[in-house]
Length: 297
Image 1 (cartoon, rainbow, N blue to C red):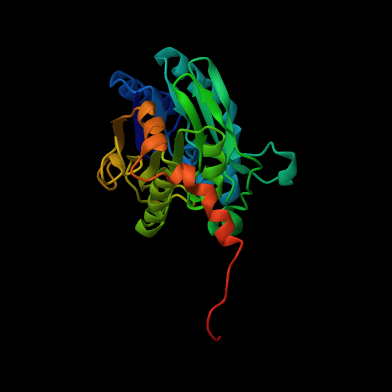
Image 2 (cartoon, helix red, strand yellow):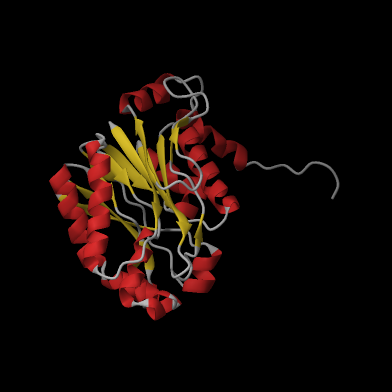
């Protein structure tokens, strides 16, 4: 199948119709190139803060609540486009305030849609320092495994990809494709997520799809600068490129990046790769349970 990863710029909208037109253009372009899985980035939904006006878009709490207020409509739009074009879409994540455990604070939610409609949500598990101390966004509970007609998927939102046990739990539950939407201000932040996503593809011998926000949005609080490149990774092993990079765009260049991937290749490398990271994972446990101190402190 063909996967499309978005390097997505945030735009200002005066009307909902302008956003609807943008998203429709993006989905139509990727579907027209034969993509059946489209991945949008973390916090790409923050461009909807513009619908509240400049003062709202520049206010931390106001922007979060404005974006969250459009979640039902964005879900309907994504579901309609997924059905119309016969594709699966991971929509750009954004704040959602409906979790009882969160004490009135938002989670960072990404929603997956298929041709039949909304398949479910993944809330970001691990909060960055800015999310904790600036926006007061809280971590979600649990991990979703999406069994779809085009493969079994899990979502690691940005910082989540830097913690291997999350992706490992999903891989052990059958995940073959890990979707990694991200939003990072600086090159260092993007590199951390890139390295994390590539490592998750390596150790779980699977596909990782990295879709970032790119470009400047000086009007949107918390999203003023965004650095990244869209990329699709696999394990650097039999049936995959020796770099592990199936496709990547230029740094900061908006648009889709495409890769044709085979889940049969994932199954084959897990069964008979040059190395067997996926199968050998559990051999670590006895070693890490037996740490010995050597030498003098």
